[in-house]
Amino acid sequence: MEQIDFRQTIERLKDTGFTPVPNTVEISIPDAKNVLRAGIKYFTGENARWLPEYEEVANWLAGNGGRGLLCFGNCGRGKTLICGRIVPLILNHYCRKVVSCYDAQQMNADLDAVKQKHIIYVDDIGTENLSVKYGERRLAFAELADEAEKKGKLLILTTNLSIDELREKYGERTIDRLRAITRTVLFSGESLRK
Image (tube, rainbow, N blue to C red; front, top):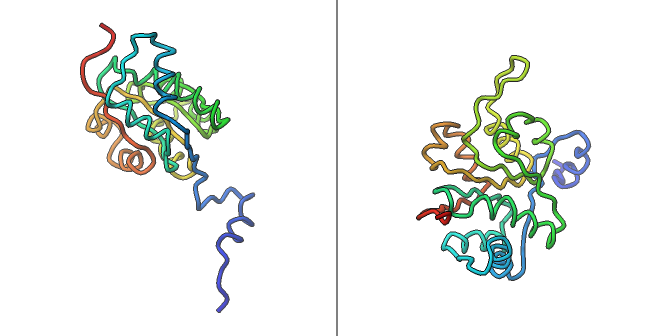
């Protein structure tokens, strides 16, 4: 019996839309901790603080293993600043990647356009309602997580909800996908917005 050359067969089927191997995004930023620290200092000034959770984000920047980033927890700890402003600049500068940035309501309003992007930042997941367009009801974030897993899209996500609250909103299936395709970082402690 003839052996199948999987790589060759996958390549031959590429134009059909068949993607058995997700097209993941690999990130490897040299000196990631100092780069992230410089970004935080740029946006917050000379009194910038380095929090323990930032170390985990720097580790992700140093080598993401093809996985996205889910930053969750207390408000006012720098999740949106880091994921929505600093990380897109770092990825563009060092990797020439463009991060498409949305908040949860924008994702909900135009999910099909969001799903066309390959590197996607969504702020405040869990705050959106069920998407209803022309009578069609859609759970936008669950669809986005499914699409990301199948096609290797890089998701960078922030939320003030806990993992249990996300599970309650989206279900175990979506949380299981998020565990597989993102590195989670808990932001806990007092708000820095005092």
